[in-house]
Length: 113
Length: 115
Image 1 (cartoon, rainbow over the protein chains, first blue to last red):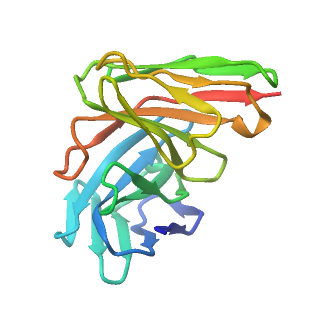
Image 2: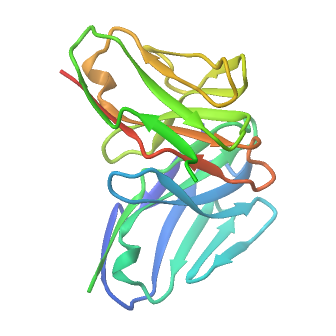
């Protein structure tokens, strides 16, 4: 059974710091991995999607990496800003049932001014 | 751009009542999903649909029903509400299975409390 874990559950950093969010998954048989952002009272917004054949994806100050063999992904946020405060969730798309995304429980990030 | 629209935003139900959460999307997506998110947890798939007239169970379907009569609409019905169904419900849609990199779009959520 695929399980997705995100550590830490919460993180507080001062503005300007570079930070890394971690995501691990138990089954390496995945199609892709996706990082989402969730603001309070809102839905999820897709940030980055990494296909299983890729090692990383970048968008602006965000960089996501994928090491499928070790079951790990990281989301790197450069020069963090208060506007980055949100919950970040990762999700893997299972190879045996391609409709289904398996979500982690998220990391709640607070960037202090 | 409307995207995925859910109604209602908030609802309080009494135990045993029934209700329908509405979801509509204007992106002509074939694939639609209902998820629930409990506090501090990730999203769990309730039901999904790959096109009009086709629905299937996800991880946690008990206590729910869905229908897909049109491409745009995917309502979720709660029958005989129970306190365990207190959660935040998200509807989502995508143009395909998500294998090619096309993203999934989420609605803003429906907060449901069963008392």
